[in-house]
Amino acid sequence: MTLHSDAARVLTGWQPPDADQALLRDRFVDHLAQHPDGLSRDCFPAHITASALVLSSDRVEVLLTLHAKAGRWFQFGGHTEPTDPTLLAAAQREAAEESGLDDLRWLPDPVHLDAHEVGFCHSDGPVDHLDVRYVAFAPRGATPRRSSESEQVRWWPVDALPTDEPSIAELVALSLRA
Image 1 (tube, rainbow, N blue to C red):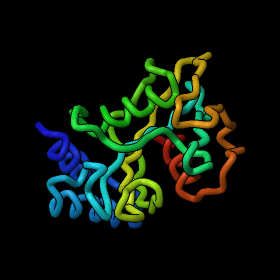
Image 2 (tube, one colour; image 1 turned 90 degrees about the horizontal axis):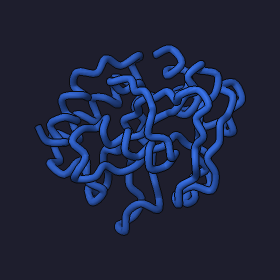
Image 3 (cartoon, rainbow, N blue to C red; image 1 turned 45 degrees about the vertical axis):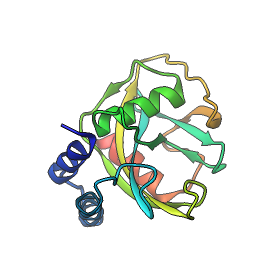
Image 4 (tube, rainbow, N blue to C red; image 1 turned 90 degrees about the vertical axis):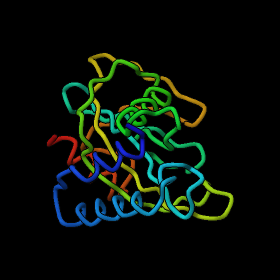
């Protein structure tokens, strides 16, 4: 199975929590049907990305990164790589690289989808990231470390996030119910 076929299988089989998420799922599935390279960072004007929200084992804190290029707090994630066998594996790799935590416990299915424009990602101009979002749980006492892509990596109370970004709030809410 290729990464492309895994992504199509995962997204086609995913049960969205609401009508807006269903519309995004359909958009992502259509994107993959139209673009054999739809997971490559070279696919323009949109490509599939994978990310992960890391929660504490007791679900009272969330680990976020202050993204160096964007200057904003986000979950961990980014572009898939040709060596990623699955979307989940891409999210796992990104989370380990960006958080320094490699002993996370993962839910097998995405919890949220988001489409957002990124202005600094592609040489041809702004590109849409079609982000497939997973959730992982850190072991008690996990100590993250910052990567070169981050200004900071920090635990935040789930009810006191450092951002008012609606998609992050929705991702946290859905992750807490997962």
